[in-house]
Length: 218
Image (cartoon, rainbow, N blue to C red):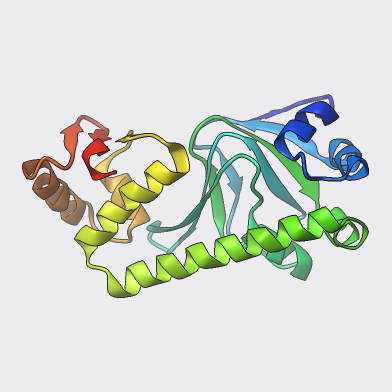
């Protein structure tokens, strides 16, 4: 993790958020803590109080929940220009975080103090619209996740995992282990390995060491 000593330039913010009022961009530049995270760095931890929330500038963030055995459920990804709705909820309620967030690749964020949230909601229409859109988008994604867990078979969930990955990153290869996928789908490595072998037999994926080419699925 690298914390930049200078505030982020308003011109950079304007390119990423052209719909924000000029004064809001000035405040974001002044209040935001500009941080670069390396791949797999943790941005937020479950159980810790949230005193700030991230806005993604570059890169990709994975938001998830984990059980006591360390198995994860992927909730959603955050792309550049997006804010984490779950962290906003915890900020407004002054509650402990109920999610974890990790950098999927080298990622730049702005960490905004919780005190700015309510004030900007009142002072800036575009900020209110930005936050409400984030809530709606994340809510829809959470419903999709719940539907997937409740109604889809594991092979369908695995295909959806790759499809969601493509939508979030635009990439058609997954660099990680079978255990990493199993953790995200709350199942065992053996189940994932068996399903991947089935997909490999049908030509839907190509498997090499810690790398899966799923271009045929998207």
